[in-house]
Structure formats: C-alpha cells, structure tokens
Image (cartoon, rainbow, N blue to C red):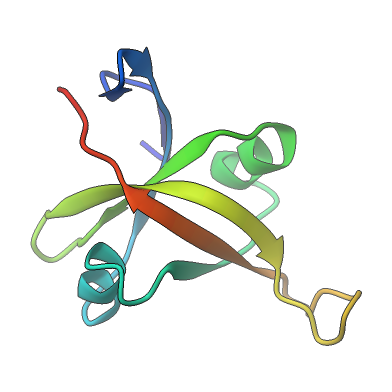
Amino acid sequence: MTFSTERDWKDGEQMKVLDFKTIEPFFSQERDGIKPFTVRRWDDTDSRFMALERSYGFSIRIRNPDTGESFIRELVSWDYIKRNSWKPIEPRWIILFLGDRVDVLL
C-alpha cells in the first residue's frame, strides 16, 4: 500500500500516511534524524504524489525493504529540486523534509 490511513493514530486522530522504501545507509540516517529529508523521483501516475499536490498534513512511513523495520516522521514540507531558483529539473525529483518522529498506536 502506498497511501494509507489504516489504524495509524496520533493524539487520538487518524493520520494520513504516505509509505516509501529506503535502503541502508539512508534508512538509518533518516530514522535517527541525521538526514532530515528524503529525495524521490516524481511519478505522475503514483497516488502518493497526487495526494501531496491535493492535500497537506501527511506523515511519511519509511520502510527498510531488507529488514522490514519502519518508522514514521511528520512531513514538514516538500518541494521540487530545481536547477535554478524557479525551474524544476527533468526528470522531476522532489525533496521531502522530515520532522519529528511519530509514535503510533496500532
């Protein structure tokens, strides 16, 4: 599942969670807050990116595909990676800025 709201609760409210996979060493760096962002190639057919364009208030679940370990961080903001101050590079890539780690009740 790439977009979920299933049973992920924070402070009594259901969260909007976007799922991504990350391999080592980036997984550990993002989990531990050493690297407070993740970079993704934009895909116009991917529901996660369409959701980002239409809404806000998401959290990001990052899963290590090798170990199955995962964590959730708040999504602070996102932007296209740009060649200069106004024009996105092609193919389009985005940077997702990660906030605090979220503890969820399952």
